[in-house]
Image (cartoon, rainbow, N blue to C red; front, side):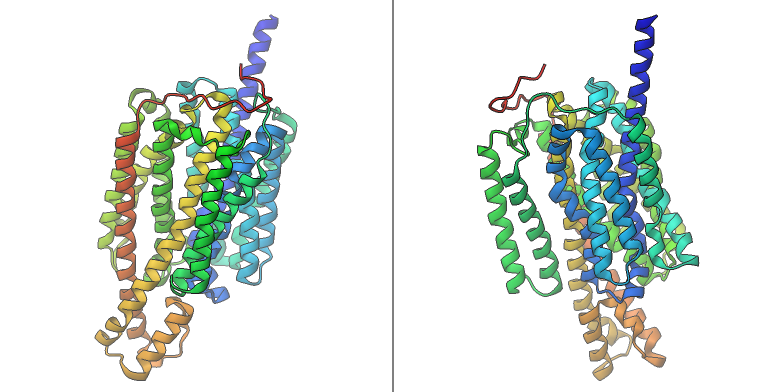
Length: 522
C-alpha cells in the first residue's frame, strides 16, 4: 500500500512539474509574436524608425541570449524553483513597464526585463523536465509538449493583441503576461518541488561578463551598421569589442574549473549540430517574422488582428504537429527530421518571395502553413537532441547553451534582416518614385524622409494628390527588400539543414570534466 501510494505521489509530482515547465515556456514566449505583429502600431504611435523597431524586438532577445547561460548555472546551484519564480516575476514586471510606456525607450526597458525573465525560464523549464524524466527516449515526448506550448504562446496572443488594438491603445497588448505570470507563480509556490544539479558548481562571473559583452556588442554593431554604415566608428568599435570579448570568453571557459558553458560539450556531434542549426535557423526565422509584420502593416495596410490571423497559421500548424512529434521522434532519426523540416521551411520562404501588394489571404495562408509544417518537424528535434546528447547532470547547461545560441540567432535576425531590408528598399526607392512620375524636389523630400525616419515616415508626409503614388512606390521598394530578406533567410535554413545532415549522428552523451572539489554524478 505504501509503495503504491509512493508511486502515485511521484507520478503526480512529475505531472505537476511538467505542467509548470510548459506554463513557464508559455509565459517566456508570450511577447515574441505579440510584439512582432504590433510593430506597425507601435511605429505609428511613437514615430519610431526601423532601427528603433529593431531594438523593440532585440531589447527582449538580447538579455535572453546574454543571461540564459548564467540563469542555468544559478538554477543548478541555488535551486530551479527559485529561478523559475524569479523568471516569472521579471516577465510580469517587464510587461507592467511596457504597459505604462509613453516612449519607445520605455518599451525597450520593459522588453529587456521580460527578456531577463525569459532567460531564467527557458533553461530551468527544460532542466525541470530532464530532472523528472531521466530517460532520453521518454523525455522526447515531453519536450515535444514543451515545444507545443512555446508555439501556443506565439499563436494565440497575436489574435488577442489584434482585438485589443481595435478597441484600446497599443500598450495594452502587454497586459496578458501579467495575470498569467502571477497565477503561475502562485501555483508553483505551492506545488513545485525544489531541485538542484548533483555535484558542486560555482558561478562563472568572468564567463558571464565576457559572454554578455560579446553578444551585446555584436547586436549593437549590426544595428548601428545597418542604420548608419558598417564603416561608422560606432559600428566598427562595437564589432571589434564583440570579437575580442568572444575570444576572451573561449579562453575563460577553457581555463575555468566550473565553466558557465563547458566547451567540451561541443565534442558531441549531436549537440554541436543541433546548436549550430538552431542558431542559423533562428537568425533567418525571427528576422523573417520581423519583416513580414512590416509587410502586412506597411504594404498591405492590414490591421493588427488581420496580420495576427495570417501569422498565427505558422504557429498553429507547428503547435498541432508538436503534439505527435514526441512519438514520431521515437521512430525516425533526429538527423532525418531536422534536415527535412529545415528544408521544408526554406522552401516555404522561397514560395513567399512571389507575394505582392495585392496577394490574397489564401495565397499567403498556404505558404505560411507550409512554413509551420517545417518548423513543427524540426524544432522539437533540435531541442531534444541537444539535451539527450549530454549526461543528465549536464542537461541544464546543455539546454541553456542550445537556447543561448538560438537566441543569439534570434537577436541577430531582426538586426541583420532589418538592416538589409532598409538598405535595399532605400536603394530601390528612387527608381520606383521615378516610375510613379515623382521626380525633382518632391522625390528628394520623400527620399530624405525615408532615409531619416524609415519607410513608414513617408505615410505621414502631407503630399496631397501625390500621396497615392508615393505610397505605391514605397510599397514596391519595400517588396524589393522583403524578397531579398526571404531569399537570405531561405539560404540560411538550407545551410542549417546541411549542417544537421553532415554533423548529426545518434546522440552519444559526452562526459564533461568534473570540477575540482566536486562529487561525481551518481
